[in-house]
Image (cartoon, rainbow, N blue to C red; front, side, top):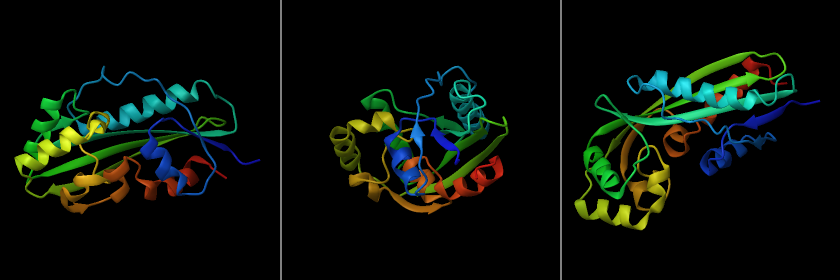
Length: 195
C-alpha cells in the first residue's frame, strides 16, 4: 500500500503547487508558534521552522505508513529577515525598500518517514531583483490587496500588479511564487523512502 503524504500546511499556495505533482496527499495544520526562535540566520531559521512543523504533525502519526512534509519560507535583504508585514505602513515601507534592489527567498523543507522515523531536510534559495517602483504603484498595490499580510515578502509575485515587480530571478520559480520549490520534492521523497 502506498504511503500517505501529509503536507503540514494550510497554505493555499503550497497546496495548489504540490498538487501539480499528481501525487495524492492530505493537509494538516501543524499549529506551530513561529515567533520564539532567534532571527539571525535565514537558512537556520527556515530549517528549524520547517522541522518544527513536520515534527508537530509527525507526533500524531508515528509508526503510520506516512510521509510528513513541513515547509517554511522567509524573505531576506541586507542582513534583515523579512516576515509577513503586520501593518499597512510596514507593507508600504517594505516595498519601498525592496524597490530597485535585490532580495532572497529561503524555503526550508523537512520530510519525515513516519514509519521509520527517517528525517531529511533541505533549504532552497531564490534571488530576485525588483524593478524600480513608483510610490503610486506601491500605494495602489497595498490598498487593493489584503493578502499582503499573509505573505512573507509582503507581495504576491504571481498575480495582479505585483506580478510585474520582479525584473530578474535566479533559482526556483515556485520558491519565489508560492514558497513551494516543487522541483526539490520528488528527489527528497525518494530519499526519505517514499515508494
